Amino acid sequence: EKGGYEHFMAKEIMEQPKAVRDTISPRIKDGRIVLDNITLTADQLKTFRKIFIVACGSAYHVGMVAKYVLEKMTRIPVEVDVASEFRYREPIIDEKVLVLVISQSGETADTLAAMREAKRLGARTLSIVNVVGSSIANESDDVIYTWAGPEIAVATTKAYSTQLAVVYLLAIYMADLLGCLTAEEYAAYLTELQALPDKIEKILQNRENIQYLASQHFNAKDVFFIGRNLDYAMSLEGSLKLKEISYIHSDAYAAGELKHGTISLVEDGTLVIALATHQNLFDKMMSNVKEVKARGAVVLGMTTENNTQIEQVTDHVFYIPQTCDVMLPSLTVIPLQLFAYYVASMKGCDIDKPRNLAKSVTVE
Ligand code: F6R
Image 1: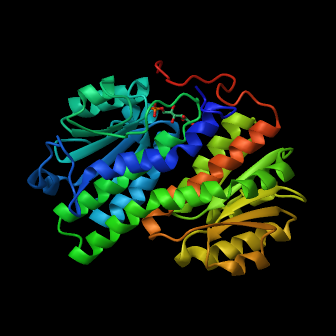
Image 2: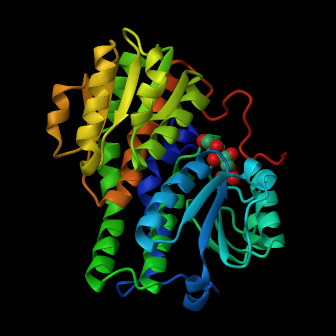
Image 3: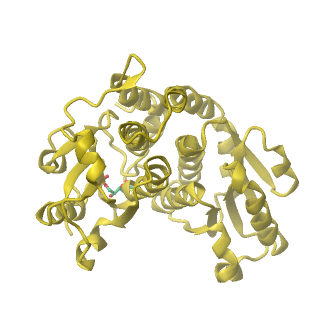
């Protein structure tokens, strides 16, 4: 059942190239994105003054990536909210708002309740769901399925990756309908999107490097993940993966925020995982790495293949392939999942069923 792997999580991590390909391929026909069954029209799209994204946990982290991506590509303002918070702050919603709901199970109680509230207030709803026929899929105005297949491990991996893939499909689709992309830009985004599965595969083939880093650090007491912009969203996901399955305390910070408080926690030997995959933020990230190094931190860096200067300031580096800025999260997440997995495995944790957690959270 586990396909020769020790845990479902390992199997599901390794299935990601296929899951992402299965999610993307059927939606691209003759160089165009075709979202079958989507009833949302271009005219309706043009009326939206705002997009709200609601989700929980890792799906919320996908929402954070989606905020950056959708704002950049469509220029529609986007707000992201944890579903359990959304309903209790009287969100300003009407028919000029699109509410994007992200959920693997399609049954998460808070997410479902937030979606129902959005509908009651008149918003149009679009969901990204993995389980066909689930409540969220059934009740939203439109649904785009992630074709990840069944996800058994409590910690999500392939569902997260396929949710990201749908976000990219949707962002390109919407940006095109809104006239925000030239034909060349459209084609270039599609090329990058279709190249992601092979690049994910390449990172997976390199997993022994991550296993080695995990073997050096599985006894860490605290781990800090830092990054800027999309890498901040990835820091949140990396930190959640690590703490939920390895029980190591960890936190994620926007790198520029460190000096406003958190850096007081950094001492000799503190492990910091620094994500620096974006060229335009690379120098700023290197300054932040130097700040924590000066306080004794051990720094594991992640960047793209060309940025070898990082080796001068970090203790170890993991390189990921290049892609366009908005799609880097699809690659960044893979080493973060592997790191959490190997650390938890070396600590002998119950990886597929971490303590206190359930796969589908059906209470509010
Ligand atoms: C973390 C994880 C959870 C889920 C969250 C939402 O690895 O799996 O944080 O992402 O409980 O679940 P769904 O996507 O089913 O709504």
